[in-house]
Each structure stands twice: as C-alpha cells, then as structure tokens.
Image (cartoon, rainbow, N blue to C red; front, top):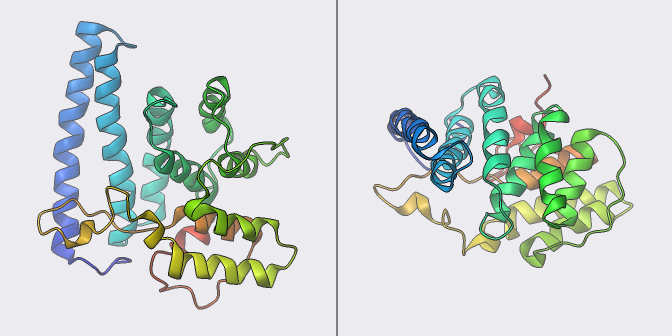
Amino acid sequence: MRDTLKTVEHWVNMNISFEDDWEFHNEMLDEMIATDGEDSESAKRARLFLKADCIGRICDLYSSGSSIEEIVRIFPTLVDLMTKTWSSNDSSYIELMWVFSLGVLLNAPAEDFEALHNKLKDEEYNDFLIDYLFEHIVKTEINIDSELMFASPYEYLISAIHTDSKEDATVIIKTYVQKIWYQGHSDAGWHNSHKKKDGFYHGYWSFEAAAIAKILSVNDTGWENMQYYPYDLVHYTD
C-alpha cells in the first residue's frame, strides 16, 4: 500500500464499491441516452457520476499500491468524461487540475487533451496552472498570458516555476507538500475523509506538486515516503 491511513480491507471494499457503482452508472447512462439523447442533461448527469467514479478509482488504485499501468488504462476514460461534462459554471477546478497533472505524470498523448483544452478556451476559462500543465503535455511552447485563478494555496507552489534556482524550487515544492497542500484544501469535500468510519476515502495526493516536480526535474531523493507526494507517479516512464 502507498497510503497506510486505511487497512488492506478498506481498499478491497473500495474496489468492490467501484465495480458496483461503475456498472450501475453505465447502465444509467445507456438508459438516459436511449430515452433523452446523447447530449441530454440527463446523460450529462450520468457521466458526472462516472467521472467521480473514475477519479476515485484512480486514487484508490494508486493508494492501494496497484501498478501505474492500471491507472494508465483507465485514464483516457477520465479525460473523455471530463471533456464531455466540463462547464465553467459548475465544474470543479481541483478535479480539472488533477486531470491535467495526471496527464503530465502519465505521459498522456497530447491529442487526448486537445478537445478539453479547446473547450476551456471556448468558455474563456483561463488559468496559469492549467495552461502550464497543458504546455508540458503537448510538449510545445504556448503563449501563456493567463493568471492563477485561485491564489490559495497554489500561489506558493507556482513560485517554484518562476524561480531560477533548482534548489529553491525543490525546497518550495517540498514545503508545499508537507506544510501547505493539505491545510490549504480544508474546504474540499475530501478533506478529513479518512476520519469517517464508513466514508469513501480514496487517499490524499498532491498531483499538481508531483507534476511540477517532474517538469522541473527537481531532486526528490528521500521523498519516497513523504505523505501526500505520489513519488511513483513522478518517476513513471512508459
């Protein structure tokens, strides 16, 4: 296990829950498409359930110690669901940022993200961190003129990008992960979910810090067991 806040039994139960929910929500989507159409609001609601299932599943797989290849197999489905359900009016910034961060960490094909990024641009949803991550997915320099939409807690992490010192960047990322990331998400629905006896705890991972650590090639020697830092994802090569 990579996350030891819960027992092996917990992760086994989470796997069972995912299988049940995934089947149920896929059946729901098929029914909504048949009755209301592919692009209906009811179909979108079913896809939102599937997107949540998919995000939870990826976190469960990583937390429980599964191979990165298992995450790679399900990840394109998550990107597709995010693309089909994204709306600047009611979608989660954290989920969007995680998807782009995972795209960097999993070396996802650039074409998988083009439709999603174009949708954000069409809706004039501009964010420095999202654009920066997308630039490193497509491996092509783009004109980033956007600002950070949410200063807290990401502004501190972004300073690692702007410093000219690799050593300073390393310290910034480590400090962010150890002292800022979890506390900075105290308003997130998953915060303190490990304390709920019957809750759906998926693990705590700072995917954005890991993605920037990978992009900047910081020296993360000794970070293998650092809480919240998905070390194995940073060092994944396909």
